[in-house]
Length: 340
Image (cartoon, rainbow, N blue to C red; front, side):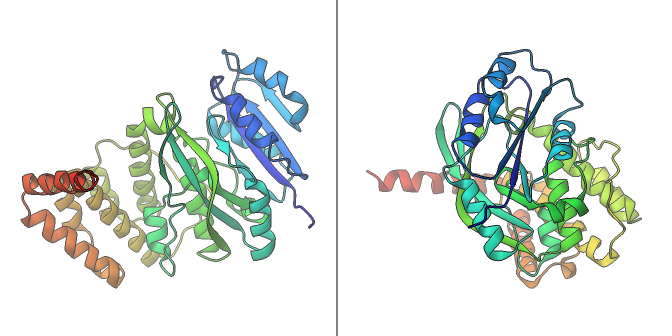
């Protein structure tokens, strides 16, 4: 086998508690055509000492202040020369043979993006769950963009795709990976994607990680992103509705995204409203759920998702919140009772 060059970028800032494990997970792959780049944002903990310890394994590394994670990754992208590219955050680790598997899938399928799964750990090292992988809805581009959940550490892109997607948006500090995924989908649709059930990454949830400590900012960026999508396509009613029903919106403009088919954008925004209604319903926020359910146009959903809309609409309107919460508690207790 001729091994394609894989470029891995590790952005890091004050992640000394985890950095060495992440570095070792890359080195221990023993992948024969690896380009390993580490970008540190000027850490003040023990990170510089760890970086110098493994300096001989990096094709390029630097310790200097930056403008955040997106900026750090972009510095790595500017240096990357690989055929296959991804970044691995300092507090995550590759599973054994992950890079060999990725190389195999790219060569066998001629894909432009390969999506695997993650083993998600709670702090300190308690397995929480196995992720389902990046969400892809066959023959439904609007839903794939409207829901747009991606397992970034296990989603690898071909250089050909990245050259069209462009660098990460430095104005996004929480959803830069979602923005990249959306831009891929706008550029290439649902073509050239290979999805595998292989577990490629161990993903850590801990009190210092952005995923745990800054969830509200993720929600803020996500709402702001879809408001910006409506705004740039002059869909004023969608923009106004999303702005009015978000807790807060920051002024944001999506970069490097050409104007798209208006019907597709409307369908995407309707799927986002469906997602919001489902989330509010799951949290027993029935009034908020009803607002989104009443606004969206079910005719712009697939037949399957119109059925989902009807189900959420009926349950949200006619099932009392106390009964829903009681049923959920009973459901949680059933497996426990079955074990005795």
